[in-house]
Image 1 (cartoon, helix red, strand yellow):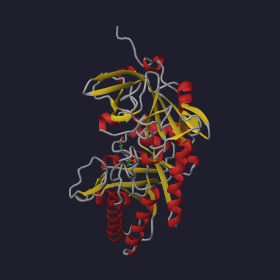
Image 2: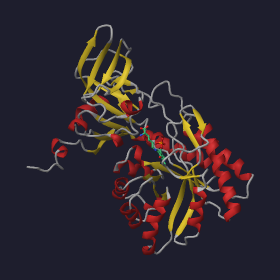
Image 3: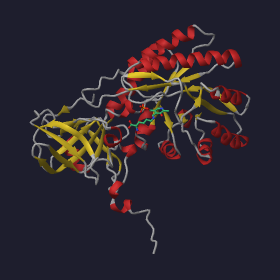
Image 4: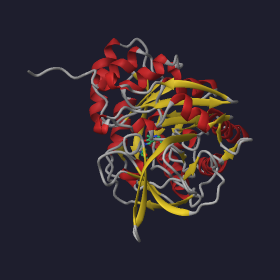
Length: 431
Ligand code: LLP
């Protein structure tokens, strides 16, 4: 996990920067990313793929954290990018991200979004449904070159934390259903269309997956489908995209596999399965989001009010909460908190870290043992780098925090804090 490292003063250190200095210089609440950890995660994925000798792409699922600066780091580390909206796409454009390495996802892309993707020469459109094929068909006459697409299929496998469930019936809004023949129907349509260049198939089975079993089942299923369809339609996929979902460590209870283990296992299964077919080994693409940025992110807060209910609970409130991290309220997600002044200090009391938003459910960490804290102390919540900022809201008209990248002892502001002026900027008078 993002090991809690302290510096010579015993303070929490993030990317070589003192967390207390960061809080002081940039204010709280604050998102801080240790960029060397992000690079390290990507490099581990690269290394694992390189060892297998297979052609591959690591397409960062930018929904986990989509800002210009992270897109730039991903490109620098030879990652590709997956975007799911015009907003994420324009972020990539502003980052100068090579568009050939961008994939465009989504189960209800609008005509305008597809047009934007084509205008910007997005590398691959991952087509999700028949309506999208219809929309694309409207735009294809204007295209000089065939448009690269993949088909997203719903393979009938859904993964959950620690185990996988193989569902007979797929109940998902995403992708072409295999069971009912819709995926095959889509394939036939696409193969008949000379303006579409089908690169292969995509599937994604879930998120925060800790075990390999679901991925093994996915690889087997995808190869079996590709082989069946190759016999029937003589189409050999150039790429199989197995999506993302690799789990991370939020608390000490989480024991995810390392990136290289996921990759090694998947490719081993792939090679074994492919050897039993007439297919040649395809490229493998994956779409990790959480596992690239999650553990590298920290949320820094200032502690304020304390409420002790004798015999029941002690609430310690911070200056952020569900507006900057909706995951505890939405998914009962668990996090671990430390005091930035002394992350290794022995815990002496059990407290519940409450947010500042007007909702009882705005609890960031329930019943955690912490050292004694006082108003003004800086609290850090660990592993908030994925789906924190990207799911942040302006609930209670509170501005979203700033984002700082820390690396080798240097801290750089990469997203400004929202001001009161920002919060009311779009309002118009009625009377
Ligand atoms: N590829 C596709 C097609 C996806 O739908 C997703 C996530 C990913 C890749 C990346 O998955 P990851 O590696 O990050 O697990 N807001 C939720 C997570 C939603 C995930 C949606 N799709 C959360 O905070 O846990």
